[in-house]
Amino acid sequence: MSKQVEIRLTGSGGQGLILGGIIMAEAALLDGKNAIQSQSYGPEARGGASKAEVIISEHEIDFPKVEVPDLLLALTQVAAEKYADDIKSDGILLVDSSVSLPEGIVAGKIIQIPILQTAAEVIGKPMVANIIAIGAIQQILNIVSKESLESAVLNRVPKGTEELNRRALAEGYRLVEKY
Image 1 (cartoon, helix red, strand yellow):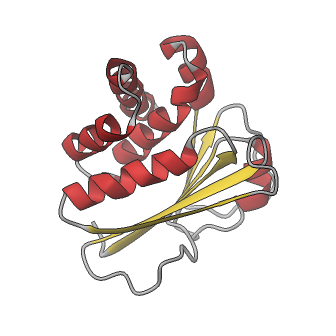
Image 2 (cartoon, rainbow, N blue to C red; image 1 turned 90 degrees about the vertical axis):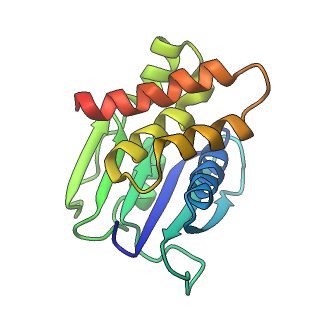
């Protein structure tokens, strides 16, 4: 891992991206790395644009905000249109397959996988899309260990949903392997 990785998770309020960011940061801490997580909502929390950011580093983190992300996740059309331009030229854009990409995106790599459809149809619970997404991010970047990521997920999800969320994480890994 390079010394610092900046991740921006975008979608709509209610998709659990804030929780996804918190889980990624917690996994990094469990791995003994430094991490900072922050979030912002559009004016209308549910359904509005939502953004969570995570910085993971082996060193001290000088500035607590993501300036230009190494990886941008966009789960909705609105999020892709609002944030997809703002990525490092060698960065990775991870988008849900339901999203049509705006013209002229500059990203080193674009990965389009069916996160929302997998949550709804394979797992049967649309609300686990955030867990599938962070599984996919782990598989792409490998900046936190799978063990720490699973621990962080299980620490944070409602009691009784552990198995469901374990399956969601595994689906996230699988989507990227298949891709």
